Each structure stands twice: as C-alpha cells, then as structure tokens.
Amino acid sequence: MSGRALVAGPRPSQRVRLSDLRIRHVWPLWLALAALMYTGLDVYARRGVFGIDAHAYWLTGHHVHLYGATATTRDAYLYSPAFAQAIRPLTWLPWPAFYGLWVVLEAAAFAWLLKPLGWAWGVPALLLCGFEIYQGNVVALLAVALVVGLGRGPRAWAFPALTKVTVALGPLWFVVRGEWRALRTVAVTVAVVLAISVALDPSAWASWLHLLVRHPGLDPTLPYRLATAVAVTVYAARADRTWLLAPAMILASPVTHGLGQYLTLLAAIPRLRRPHTVHARRDPATAVR
Image (tube, rainbow, N blue to C red; front, top):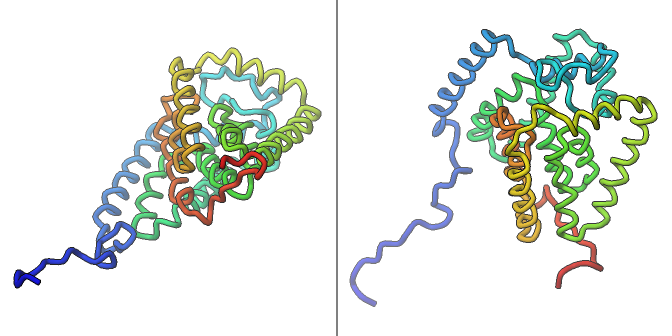
C-alpha cells in the first residue's frame, strides 16, 4: 500500500440530504414565504377575491338553475350536478362558515399530502399552497384523489371525472398497465353516481353537457396540452413513475389563467413517491413478463 494518505469521501450516513435538514437550517425560507403569503393576503383583500371559487360552490344551494350564469363570469358554476348535489347540505351554512370550513378542508388535505416532507420542508411547501387555499378551489381534493386513486381506492378517480373532467387521467393509467379491476371499479362508481344524480335532476345534466360542448372560456391550447398529458401518463404507467401523473394533470387542466392553482397538484408527489402509499397493481392474466 502506498504511503500516500487517502482522502476518503463522506460516508453515505454523513451526506447531507434535504430530509436531514431541520427548521434551524431553513428558517429564512419560512420567513420569506410567510412574507409572500402576507402580501398575497393583502392583494386578495384589496381585490375582494377571497373564496372566489368556493363562493360559486356555495351558491349552488341558492340558485334555481345551476348553470344560469355565463361560464366566464364570476360565481359561474362549471362542475357536474353531482358535485353540487353532494355539497348541498354544506351550502345551507352561512357563507362565512362555509368558506371557513372549505379553507380548513383544503389546508388539512395539503398538510396530509406534504407530511412526508417533515416540518422543515413541509411548512414552506404548505405556504406555497396558500393562494389555492385562499381562493377555495378543489385542487387539494384532486391531489388527494390522485394519491388515493393510485393506491387502494381507485373509486377516488370519480371525483376529478365529475368536476374537472380533463384531469381524470387515472383510468388511462389503469388501461396502460392492464389493471382492469381498478378500471371497472372507477367505471362502476362513476356510473352509480351518474345514475343517482341524473335521476335527481336530469335537466341539470343536459345543461352541463351543453356547457362542456359550448364552453366559451375553454383555452385554445387545451387539445395540445391534453395530448401531451396523455403521452406523459402512458410513459409514466409503463415506467411505473406514479409521481409523473401530477405534472400530467397540470398539463391537462382546462384553463391556464389559474395555472398557479393547478401547480399545487405537485403537493401529491411526496406521497406518490412513498412505496407503501401507492401500491402497484396488475392483473396476473395481463401482466407483462
């Protein structure tokens, strides 16, 4: 052996990983994002857009015609009648109570999704979701549906299918992977919800289908983004990369003016990358050998 001293590299246990960092290492990031959120709160207050999306949901319990408002106007309701029927009991609450409950629901959903990051990185990531939480959309629930739908609850894909239709990429994932049981579960769930909802209000469904066909606010880039999202989903399914479905769903979002909201779908990635959260399924008869 040569007498030259050998300089050993850091042992794997000594390498600094992001997950090893503690709050004392990232507190400046916390302060910066807290300042950003405070500024956002001020802007939202000045523009009067707190709960702008949640308010449209709340009004579904107070309007005779769900789709009476023009699609591109404020307080226009754009989801299926099934979603409005499901949240109907909540709309009986006063608006401040409904909005407060919606904020808590979305914040809790994001907190659950980001929990694998730990406090040091989870809190800054949660702060970045603040603008979506302020507006009260359903993106946090879509992210939860993504994680649960690829795990033990494929029925969860019924939620995006009956709200923001284009982002419901789970069934395509199941087709590519030959997971026919999961695909049947989604199809049956959607069919049952659809049958009950149509029986309750068939005219509302006719109005919603008309809205989807003639929606004046659809983004002209949607066909191209949707094609890209399909390609990403097919690759992700073949390569067993569940986390790619989050950016695929962002690409498939029906509009781009709310891109900041849809970017919060990335909050699903920490759980999608945990093997015990997302379970690989493939029917034995169709498994690729």
